[in-house]
Structure formats: structure tokens, C-alpha cells
Image (cartoon, rainbow, N blue to C red; front, side, top):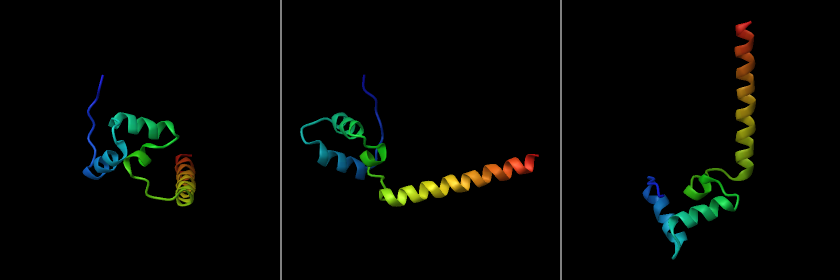
Length: 75
């Protein structure tokens, strides 16, 4: 069974360049199977891995502080 998805024109052009004589499904599956992420397949990888790790750490730190503030206010 197949499913229809919507992608941007830019992503379509990138996938089309990658696919050669393969199907789009094969290209996407190969990227995901090689430990890729959907962001890599769709071209949305905005940060290098070091920056992404720092951003993730910052978000986790800020989120933890928010949870503590909510807990303090509810007691």
C-alpha cells in the first residue's frame, strides 16, 4: 500500500537528485536505515552536531527549571 505525503519543492529536488533510478521510497528508506534522521532526509538539519548538543542541553536545563518552579508554586 502506498501513502501520499507533501514535501517542499526544495526537498523534492534534493530527493530527485539522490534517487537516480531508485524510487523515492528507496532513497528515504536507505537514509533512515543508515541511522539517519528524518531531518537529514528532508534537509532540515539546521545545526552541526556540536551546536545541536549544546541547544539540547540548554533546552533540558531550562525545562528542568520550569518544572521545579511549577512544583514550588503548587506546594
